[in-house]
Image (cartoon, rainbow, N blue to C red):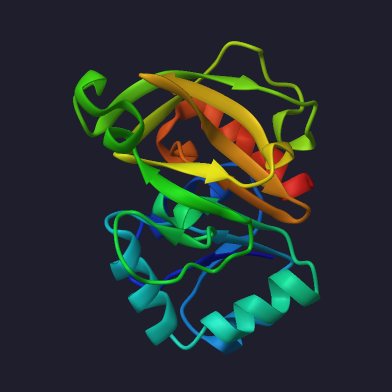
Length: 204
């Protein structure tokens, strides 16, 4: 069972509906009890880093998720802000992240300053894989996904960056640390490209 973590952020129903169309069992998880049958996890998110960490901590699921992901090695996919809170911290706020993937979340303005294109980065963009990861099985090299963000994930270990996109700079848009995946783009809004990625995640 794929469980989509429902802690108050992200379009949980969009993920449930996409998996329903693929005949893959997926349900929301709003409590620790909901997590017990999870073979895989999706951590969605929109908005600000600190707010996401506050809501996840107060959901009562954070400690259980730490146990499942870091010790039991249950695969997890963080999406958008759900990817960003996988990091150690963020320039957007003061809260500590989950630290499941070593890294820092940066503002495009920090890197580009007066050369920064308009923020947020919104719309469709090419995604270029750096590795033959199972997450990209059967997908074309010219993948396009939908983005909406002003911050990006700066991996401490370059090997954790498995795909990039460009918006003023080349940045990591898909990351992986063992069983922990993250996508800055929104697969639930990316039509057949997103459906293929979510199906691949179900099979990893």
